[in-house]
Length: 299
Image 1 (cartoon, rainbow, N blue to C red):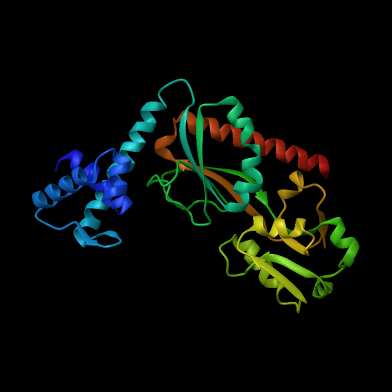
Image 2: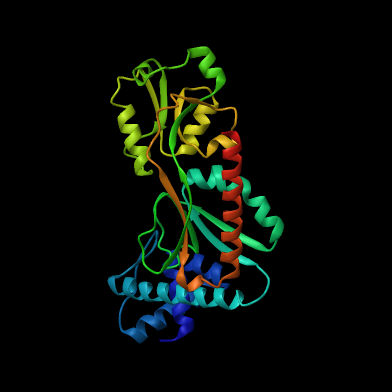
């Protein structure tokens, strides 16, 4: 099979449109169409179903797209390793983590990394879904549990606990609960127990909701819970790493907390010698050490 035709096929399958694929490749729609027809004729099969809204892969097209997807990942890996043979840290690094940790802990610290490596390009993918690192869906991950995939280098960063927090303004206006039973008179802000989240958070949410709480507000990530807490809407169940960057939050019912949630950094074994990975890993470890130091100082 012709490599150039496969490249064009992959772009069309990925875009679902001859026009969009042509725009991405810098080719006319008619040129893309001719290459796809030639590939289908050479294989003796139909790769796409055509309809008014675009193109849909046939069963044979799905098989070929899976093969070209693996080829593309392998080429990206080879390209990254070649670039990483240089002394300087530059190029794209795809990082995946949860919405809450990415927006509330990692992103505010990234200026430090960019000040060291101004040519680095971070593509931050905020997903509750665990992306497949060996298949190069991402280069490096920070997850709220130890990765189970083989061929990954992993490093435990820290532990997180889910705790109850509110603003001083809310507590002045509504009082302070002294026991869990008192929570029935306050508004609870949390993720839904069925939303994608760390198991310790879901378990604590389920426990809190066994009480006949007067009013609740649920949202599908902790960033939303934090915004509701800061708006003085109620008492929120939040990860404790927020206390460094939001020091005005007051802890409620300090004896109540979740089990420990381990935070791991992981990346594929094949990227062990990547300078971009090493730069990101060292940056995160330095920030974790500083975070722990500040937490200790705060008591």
